[in-house]
Length: 496
Ligand code: G3P
Image 1 (cartoon, rainbow, N blue to C red):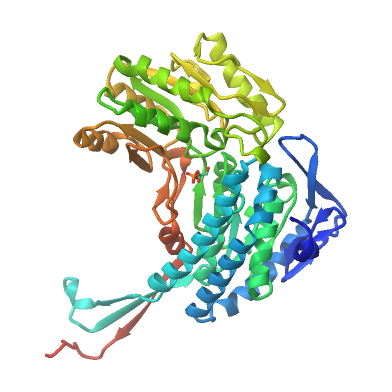
Image 2 (cartoon, rainbow, N blue to C red; image 1 turned 180 degrees about the vertical axis):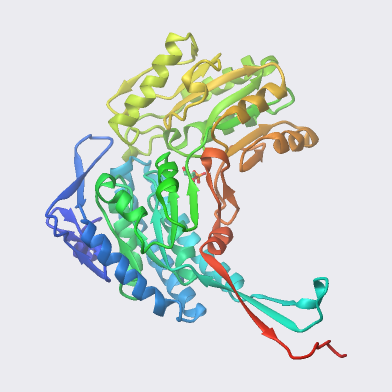
């Protein structure tokens, strides 16, 4: 059970402690932040409201710990990560329980998130050993005007302190996707978990604590973004920011100092359906892509752009599948569960009302109870409707009927977002041409958008993000290149 047994050390009364200097601590603020269970809409957990002084302390110890961590042999860093991964998997049940209660993620998906996170940490350890274990050797006579008098050795060195800010929808997986690359590369970590998901994140950090990482190398600071958010992101001790979330990321990128940024800020992933597509495959992927975790994924299918000639048939197939989705509490592993907060549900409702006013076709009746919104397919959506452009982050999916492929590409590219997109067709040549024309970080052919497998490159363009993620790219991003040049008094040619 979360918060009991070996987890008791992370709890003070009914408030979870934060983690700094290798210890579980109460904040000197004496204040806590309540985490509302999206299903019951009552307080489920409480976490410490950390102060700016506590942020300073975590930064200071992160800086010191990083210096000796960078001198720890790579194989030892990998060994500790493998240990943390194993503990994480062992503790999947209590962590998944927090995900169910804090973010209303269906029970099975919650377990999957933790197991996937353990796999990610292990893979990262292995990949780190491979890519950080080798550098480059360059010789000067390949550049015009030079003799072979200079030998250049390059290696990858850590950045320093990495600030990791994951979002509510994957508070464990998108935390470890930042923590593990940072650590294997020799950096230290200050983690600011989302409020919804903070307790799952604290339990995850506890696994790293049990694995025996050096004190101060990992900190987990909880509290209100409004009080410590800017203080953290603008902190002079931070050497890299890895953020996943909404448009707060745009504000962070404007305020952050001269530090590398890795950001994923959402998407309006288009699903373009051609006349020759396998409509059963499309319908299955629209359901999986549009309604998994009630549409609260950056990579969810967020607009279907279907050729008019096959639109009726596709909408019928999707409608039939929507009718079979189970709706209810995450504990019962329902397909559709309450969205994360009342404000989120209100926002989604605003988009639905706008579409209603502008006469979209409702394939189901709109229904909401508290934060629970029944799955809704909106047909005949037009570009003047908000739902055509905005991210509902909920179980509401618009269908726009198009009369040409160009119209679909144009709609996709007119979005401020550019995370992923997908194309359904049996013609690979057409698929490649459309993929090349789509202004998105990834295009999936004949499958719904998805970030995983976690070692694939994952990136957004435009307002969808900065940089590229995926295990290898994250490790590289969290390092910088260091070169040493050996200057010889006379040119030296091998075997010469
Ligand atoms: O919403 C965050 C984004 O990274 C989605 O990940 O695994 O659901 O495609 P995934």
